[in-house]
Amino acid sequence: MAGRSSTQPLVEDPHELARDQRHLPERLVLWDETLRDGEQMPGVHFSPEEKLAIAEKLSEVGIPLLNAGIPVVSPEEAESVHRLAHAGLKAKVLAAARTVPGDVDAVIRSGVDHIAIFVAASQVHLRYKLQMTEEEVLAASVAQVRRAHEAGLHVAFVTEDTVRAPFPFVERLYRACREAGADRLVVSDTVGIMTPSTFRAFLREFRRRVEPTDWSVHCHNDFGMATANTLTALEEGVPAPHVCVNGLGERAGNTSLEEVVMSLEALYGYRTGVRTEALYELSRLVEELSGVPIPPNKALVGYNAFAHEAGIHSHGVLRHTLTYEPIQPERVGRHRLFVLGKHTGKAAVVEKLKERQLEATEPQLASLLARVKREAESRGKGASREFLARYHALFENPGLDEEEFFSWARELGVRPSRAPLPSPGVAGGAP
Ligand code: MN
Image (cartoon, rainbow, N blue to C red; front, top):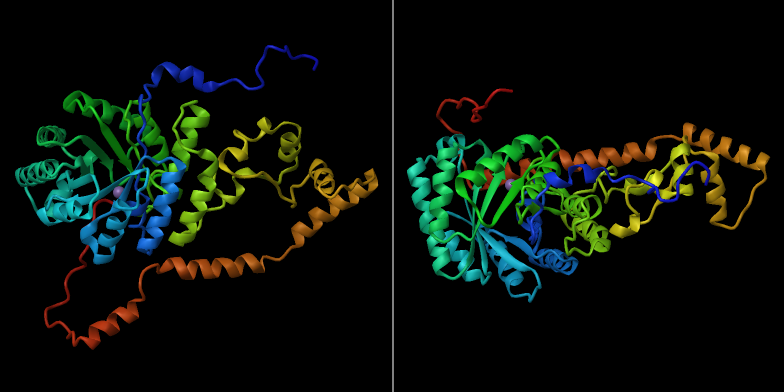
């Protein structure tokens, strides 16, 4: 083609500019949290069969480590963990425990060979939640890490809210737990407040003070930065990041598994060992079993991630997909879609007709295009309004029915309290 030298690549790789600043881990261990933090999303519950189905799919896709849950939560949860531990999965199965002997024993009994022992680290958590001193937290952590280590488990030591904890305490706690036998150290941005630059600074300080050999990060998406922060950690050489399918998890969720995998594969050219073409199937399975719909504009797995309506875009993609698609949809097990609508252009109409081996004259094309636009603009919104009404009804109150809860209390003879009404039970910070 005129004006373009044949040696010039079609697109430049801007990632080359940052290559020297990245220190990606030599061996990646993606640690899936879908069945633990993912299940803690309000209203989500996986039965043992459902946990097994998701675990099998995760394992098949090539995720090497998955958290099955917390056995002390309920007898059903203990059964789930036990089943996953004995399912012969290729993935290693992990279960979680607080720094309490009963929790650790339940994990040992479940038959898994990996444990994550977690405790809070920030002052607000120690004072208001645990009501424990730093010394008490340290002693309980060391005792339970040692107990799990002596039982032959691979031990990950996790603190919640690590990034808001005083660094001298963080340093002392992690060093003590490593000496007690912790194999992997996990730091958490439990309330999702980090940004890539602050997280990088935090991780460097953590590395300087604690000198971890194997470590993980657990990020939340409260400000929409979970994936960016997790990639920052990977760039700092952290080998075992936590991820959740579809970004499920408490509040705004955790780091999206599919976003991290595809960023590494497609943007960094890093081999993750994941069968990326099965990611969409995995995502849809978790959508179905969690009951949490994938937002249409969700990266990679949302309906619109490879859909084009605008005339200029469709035209570009039809000429060469690199114009408006960063990757081929087939890489994640999907297909591209051209949507007929208000913004449709002539090229998309021509292409649509080709699907049925049709070819229109210019005047036919012009009227067909005009009709598509007219119809799209005059189309009623009844169907989507009805859908949204049902969606809101379902997700505004995702848990059990509260009236039913109070009827159970009445059945048990729960009496009105004679104490004066308490002040609201929530002590808040700055709005
Ligand atoms: Mn979490």
